[in-house]
Image 1 (tube, rainbow, N blue to C red):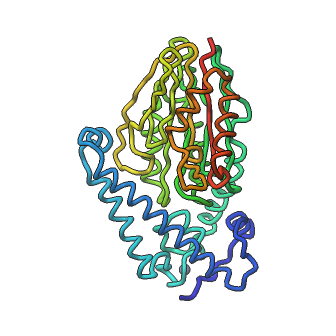
Image 2 (cartoon, protein in one colour):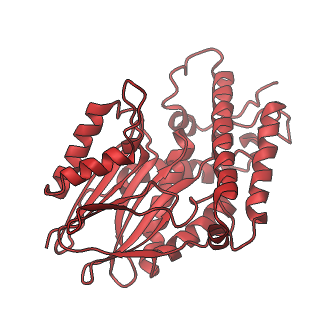
Image 3 (cartoon, rainbow, N blue to C red):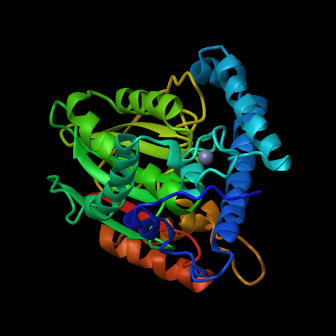
Length: 368
Ligand SMILES: [Zn+2]
């Protein structure tokens, strides 16, 4: 199959393939295309599995809440995924409808249903794509908060380390319309450019929407709508988004398929898990998140984390897991928020290789 000879703007190529080790290889384009097709296949398999698992395992009540009692939206989604998987099998995914060459791998990675190569785009369309990509990389680096928010009576600490140049993890602090504090932690499934782009656009979306919203559910509903209808990424995003009222110490949240944050109750010395109340973003067409809230008291702590913390494996192939995390959390509750994070990082690093995945944690402690 001939590769479509696309005149790529230099910046576009460099920024996309920065991390590819075999740039000078004679078969560069073939290698990249295969690599990306494999990545798309893995991403689609994972996405399909998550979508079908949700359909099979969710209770009727959950389905009613999350899909508004209508599974056709999610079935349509599976249909598109299956068509694309079939095309990968038949070696027709990414074949250009115009010239029958191969669609630019970068385009394909951004949208697995892309069927026209970059060469046939107008200059204006091409410029838009380039600037979106470049902007997303700049934005991702710049947007991670440099300072912790100042909330009276609350200690806040955060740690984030990407496994590669572009990370798929994200945390942020922001304000809702009424001035109440918002916090978010998220994890994009998959790796590479598409995961990084998705993360950056999520950051920007939340920063843009939250000041005009009253609740976590409102923000996530709009974001899910945007991702389902405008972006054909192979990946989806798990997000925990909360609103904190420092007067009543109430945390109101939606957990969209994210690893359950742990709340340590100082009075009862118990750990409570804030389990998912909605499917991950980009999973279901109709998204009806359930909002939950929890009242915190002095001495209580909240630990938000991504799977880079719990899915660390030791040499016996055992996972660090939620139980060890809860145990560690219980033993170290007297510590300050930054020291809790430091201890978790030390213990997980001693347990196994924490550098294999993006790793992000946020600790939140009610100090008085
Ligand atoms: Zn073409």
